[in-house]
Image (cartoon, rainbow, N blue to C red):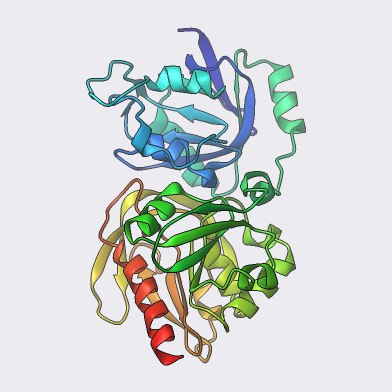
Length: 360
């Protein structure tokens, strides 16, 4: 393997061994604490324009297989690991992680003290820009400082045109802000007839398909970088058909109903995250990937009530509208990767649809 460096905008450099594509790249540096599921993480569109550090020390042991993609073309900028396992004993593996990253033109570095980098990120408590480079010289740092990261992540990952995911059950429209395939898999299991629309779809575009329900998908970036027309769409749709919002969709749902969203000091990415269901006090464990959170004191209790809270930092993890059949969660109910105990929220969404149909 060739020598490669991870450099941070504060002047720090970490030396390691390169794998994957021999590309130079720059992105926001975040860490993920998941013990498994590196393929789903690498292909998840929420990591668009980000370099991900894995805290699990050994990554790559089960290769890459066809059933674990969360998008067809990953848009992650780089992968940082402590140790790379390039020998897979998984019988369904088609590629090693190194081979896959080469195909996708994504660079990686192994041999990095990932604990030291993660500790530094926690201390800095802000968005950190970083690059993967072959030489950590003044030119590399100048290029890093000069690079401006886009705030149009959703526009870059959302589907440009509608497409179907056919089924024989309820008709569901999914608004793509950076859609995880795990959401589609859960809807397919429930025989839903799905149409995926771009994030720019208007309320009229959605209602013209006569949906039984609408899902706002996960996605990358800040909800404040989304056009106000999306907020207006949500405000209209929630009064007409059942709505289920996830991740970035949850943050947009909160904004559409008067709440505020704030940037977290350190992003939360990992699985087995403890979350309490408020009404039952039942503790669930879920997969998380968030850089923003709904500000608890900003939630208007006359309009929304809080359904889930984070047990580690008390942030809002779920909301439900008091007057309309609309609810949201910050975490990933589809898992992928992670626990599957929150997949029942998709059943709850369909039950909401059926109740609406019975009341017509």
